[in-house]
Image (tube, rainbow, N blue to C red; front, side, top):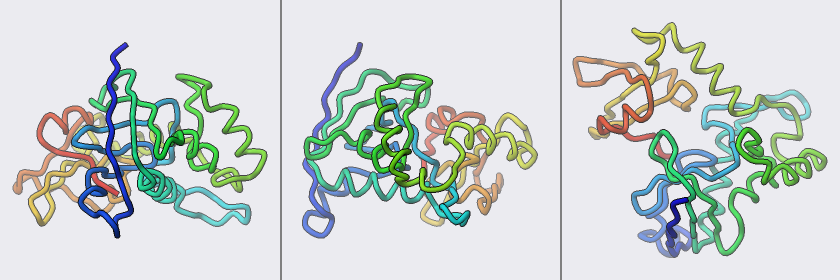
Length: 217
């Protein structure tokens, strides 16, 4: 098992903006720190573009809420991560703490992430407690993030030239190469112009290797 420790002292952006810029939140369970992409281990948060339903049946942006919660947690600093492995997308799979508190556990306790029980039941008790208290997503109804990703990938297949390659490799006005998966917040409004060098990708790994990055939140 590969182990390393990443440490980064963070403060609120208003106090130490340079330090705060070292951590960039991508979504509710993924962030970059000192150039490394970190995927919180054993939890699954809603995707940025995902919506849930509250107790009254009204849609709310649970994916954005999860990303905002993660940003608030890492701002407490210092952030330390111990990684066990690397996933298929080159992200370090890690347990991380902010100010000594488990970040993944805090997100599950707030009802803004679920235990990724396909891999581990580490956070299952925290999920059950959030469910019983009606916290976050548990106040109403939601589709599990894993199911949401599968559905979004499937329904986007008709837009791409190849059904198995629906990831959009966009180049923005600043020349930044950013890829959007079918469950990204701006996927629907992003159009690919191959004449400008934009392109389609089959996997996130392919996009990363070609020089594109995930959108920051």
